[in-house]
Image (cartoon, rainbow, N blue to C red; front, side, top):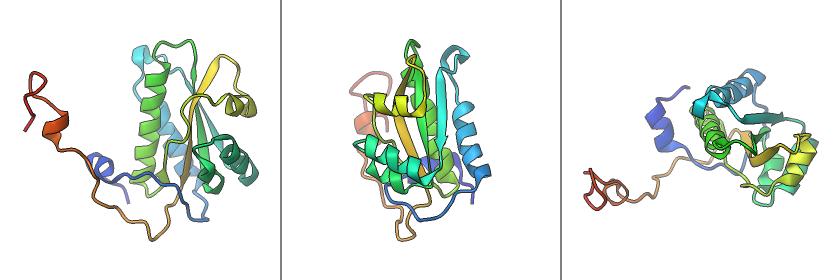
Length: 171
């Protein structure tokens, strides 16, 4: 069931456990396509996405990404890399990651950002040239049925947003 964008942002959660259930390829394609369609500084699109679906490869990624052993249990994962020499690579790839996570969540698929830099082993394993840096690995899958959306613990808007100048709470 598709969701409104704000509702998706409002409810998205980090998912680190997944049902043992395949995600249809057309939905995988849709999620990765949302990353491709993300805005990019000067339209340089300095990213590359590698979709990993084979269980043994997901298990290998789970061992390589220290903060993401749960990748091994995902239905699929996306290795997100950017051209290391790109001035905008990190920001553009981060925007693409958020697009993929939100698109997935709007379709009932959970994810989480695993790793952040220092993923040279993943880069070599995935066959990316030295000119790329892996910024993250995104595992995707259906969340456990018992996982429910809980009220997010966020600071009040007036504490983190100002009107016109710092210190004037946006209310």
